[in-house]
Amino acid sequence: MSIIAISRGTFSGGEGLARRVAERLGYRCLSRETNLEAASKVYGVAAKDLMAAMEKRPSFWQRVAGERTAHLAFVRATLCQQARSGSLVYHGLVGHLMLPGISHIIRVRVIADMDYRIRGAMQQQNLEHGEALAHIESVDKERRQWIRFLFDVEWDDPHLYDIVLNLSRMSPATACDTVVHLTERDEFKPTAKSQEAMENLALSTVVAAVLARDPRTRDADLDVVADSGIVTLSGKTTSEGVEQAAPLITRQVDGVAEVRSNITLIRTYPGT
Image (cartoon, rainbow, N blue to C red):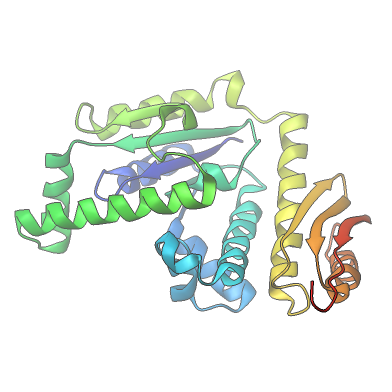
């Protein structure tokens, strides 16, 4: 079954739409917050720290690059495991960017005009009009910077989505009908090729998360690619420990049949 990734701006109505679509289709509904809680349990990192990885400004993460990489690896691996079986509606900020190359993912962007969002903020958080506007603008700015920094894309670029729904212009029922209709189209139905891509992505993200959790490889900047159980590691390191440990750690991950290491050891010498 298809996977629906709904990118929702704060108070745009995306969460309500996700729940409606999931109920209509009988799919599981997963929020960004629930996925973070699951990642917290699996990888032993406080949920608040993972939340920071999804919200903090670039200036913060530039100071703790290794921790940023690890936390994002945990979140992404957890989402991939949730998505493997399909029949999922995920609503958050960048679900579709964390699940690249999967053709049966329907990438939905939910927008609404500012008046609509301000009313939502005032009702849900008991804010005054000016406070609601300032809050929305602040959150939008941080999210835009965060996505630009991590994925090198613009959050509101329509090319990142298969459909953009304006809930200021249509009812939740109409928006739901539109998304459900897309799940019935051949373009978004799983195929043997797209299922294989999903399995490869899931395995590669788990390996990346395990490497990020292990103290021997936590700070290593390695690329992980999986193909039918064959995992290829690549990147550069100045540590012989990383070069030796990464393949050993990878072999212990369930689903890994073979490890190919293209890690390049860069030797450093005193005074150079």
